[in-house]
Image (cartoon, rainbow, N blue to C red; front, side, top):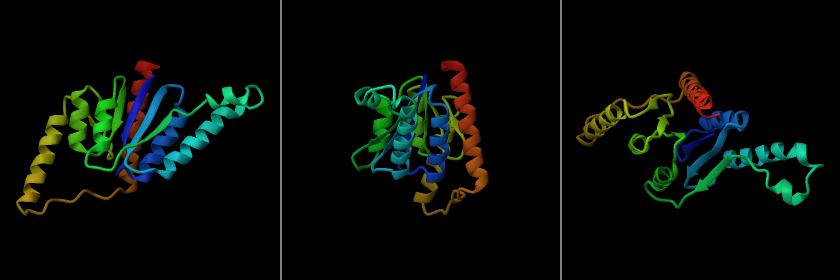
Length: 182
C-alpha cells in the first residue's frame, strides 16, 4: 500500500474530482489519500461520505452498528490553521514513503522531494531528485524578474488538454506505485 498527499488549498476542483475518482477505484491499494487544506472542501467531504457509505453497504445486514462504523474510507481531509505554508508544513511533516504528493507549489515540491517523496504537479509534471532543482531554479528566476518589474509569461489556464495531461500523469504514477507496493 502507498499514500497520496495533496496540497488541496489551490488545487482546482476538476483535479480533485479526478483524484477522488481514482482513489475510490484503487482504494484497496491506497493506504490514505490526505487532502491538506485551510478550509473545509465540500467535494472532498461528499466523496468521503459517499465512499464510506459504499464500503459499508455490503455489510449492513451482517455487522452490528459498532462494527459497521469501523469501516471507513481512505480519503482523509486535514483542515490546518489558516496561515502561510500551514498546509505545506503539515504535508512535509507527515508525508512518508511509500507515497507521492500532488501540488503546484514548487518550493513545497522541493521540500517533499528532499524527503524522498515523488511529486506530481497540477499540469502533469512529475518531480524527483533528478529534476526538482532545475524547476526550482526556473521558478526563482521568474520570481526575480517579476520583482524587478519585468512582466513574465502568465501560466496558461487549465484547458481540457492540461487537465488530460494531469489525469494521464496521475494514472502513470498510480500504476507505477501499484506495481511496486500492492
